[in-house]
Amino acid sequence: MKRPQAQVAVLQAADAQEDRRIDDVAADADLKPEAATRAAFELEADGLVSVAEETLEHYELTEEGDRYVRESLPEQDLYEAAIDAGAADGPVQMGQAIGASGLDGGAVDIALSNYARKAYGEIDSGEITANPDADTGSDPEMLALEAVADGRVEDADADALDQLERRGLLDVREETVRSVRLTDDGVTALMEGVEAAETVDQLTPELLTSGEWEDVAFTEYNVEADAEDVSHGKEHILRQTANRVKDTLVGMGFSEMEGPHADAQFWINDCLFMPQDHPARTHWDQFALEQPDEIHDLPDDLVERVRSAHKEGVGPDGEGYHSPWTEDIARGMDLRGHTTSLSMRYLSGHQVGELDPPERYFSVEKVYRNDTLDPTHLLEFFQIEGWVMAEDLSVRDLMGTFTEFYEQFGITDLEFKPHYNPYTEPSFELFGTHPETGEVVEVGNSGIFRDEVLTPLGVDCDVMAWGLSLERLLMLMYGFEDIRDVHGTLCDLELLRETEVMR
Ligand SMILES: N[C@@H](Cc1ccccc1)C(=O)O
Image: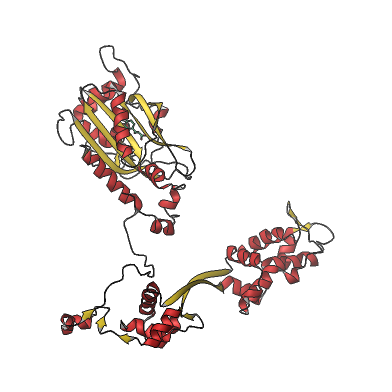
């Protein structure tokens, strides 16, 4: 039988009686560990060897752990000092015990919290007692520290090891170890004789520069052979989904809007008929900018019409809030709390010129809100903004658009709830069902712009609009339960690596 050189070497180095670690096999076979691993997987696919995998844990004391094992744990020091101060007979002043223990700085807090946890005694309103029965000499955590230091991890108590890891006294590193063993077929193959095929299994720089590559025969690929995982960079799932959303909307006839992340309150709030003295004004809890603190280029004619809508109202009866309004406030700069600021810029005709209905625009862009972090909120998220301008739009058009859009992502159980926005009437919130928890999750907000918004913008037909959350869409598509696993500083890299892309 002819086999590539690396496979022959692994076959010859493997044993039928015992598992041999791939690293040892590689050393005997004079191969790099990766090459030996690959050859082993290829041989395994043909039934000539078996490959076993084992996860080994390596324990190592941290610098702090190492110090304690040579001296003592801070809580042991505190206990000794408390006993000396008479705390076994009744409460004594904590300051006295701490002073006598010689502990200072962060060590005091460490001592106190572990002292109480281990029931070495009690700490209450500045006084400390010592439990005379506490056996601090055989503290399980100290014993475990000693076991690790002496290379006898197997003697250590598992709970104590966990606790040491939590206290940062111990580092645990996992290693996957693979070993190979010859199968009966492998033994037979060796007995019948295995020769190295004159094939090349790797294209090397030498082959390329010498030109030899033209004459050699290459080993066939076995695309089914198991192989070692290599985690490489890939597009983030959120970015992938954002691009898919964009493609979907373009497919539905929309064009993309773009515009500033930091924008004037004018575009974020005033154009949306949110009174400057009204609580709704800050309902997204926008972040204000200190530098620059105001925008310079606002269109005068539009500013005038928006001012008038706020102060004098709109329409023959001048309906509206008749609220105070100053341009100074409108010029203030915020991080946008929604991308409806972009919709205002485009609808005003100042971005792409006069619009001729029907028109459809969208954006998939970041927005910023001073929310409280929790499983469904971050301080920033991607909003899928969109609007359709046409004659005679109704709520059915809005619902139909959402149904069509979400269907493309496999979401077919949308629910709508009447809602309030200062700038749309009617307004609707959208909900979907989380595939894992079964909970009904809000995914977006929508409505038909009020005349008080459209008239100053110079739009005289209907406009329906929405802001949907890309992250919530992702949660419904993939079943993620905590948005912090997906992005932000706490994200779970393993989850992101392993999540399969949906198309
Ligand atoms: N701006 C709204 C979404 C929305 C946009 C346009 C019309 C209606 C609602 C939000 O952030 O929730």
